[in-house]
Image (tube, rainbow over all chains, first blue to last red):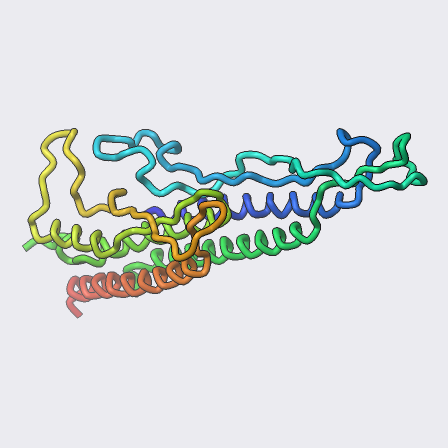
Length: 149
Length: 132
């Protein structure tokens, strides 16, 4: 019985989605953080997801007749967080304390509308993983009552 | 006549195992609903049951060498297939979240049914032992 691994899978999904929500929160919070140079300006951050391959987790099972990558993977993992390369917003605000010598201020390349959509998507996905965990839990509880009168 | 659990419990034991395995695969699909390039997978339940039934009817193959392939009733990875996507996506992901969730729920219900049958077998066995 491998019901326990469903908890790991759903858990990995929840971790990934909450990290995605975290980056979204950070992006929205910093959407209006002005800076005087392109290097120091905040850039939108995005997590990169990838599937965990089971064969990598337990290579001992790799035997004859079992090809690599033939089994279902075991959850999701965050490979890393990348910063967006989209162009920064340059605004002419000579009275801004962070304005450079030409009077320009740099604003982050955060697209708030996109971030809001991302937020909804990640919260839905998180919810779904919670649902799966709940179902797996009730399946497991049921198996414990096996053979009882 | 000795009571062997294999004979007493019938196919339900394998069905339950297959249901758990399928739940795992579907859960994995949904965990990777936002992973670019991930391909949704599923188990061929009918093929798995057929294999279990063939094995139970005595037509299973014996393993006499360590290098032999495992053809036992257990759930093998060969039953894992890729789902045909119903619509294309930009990032190459083929998980249809709603469809997967429906399948997962249905699988959980089928699991309950298999469990009910298995439990019935145990109840029967207990009754027979008690002789009440």
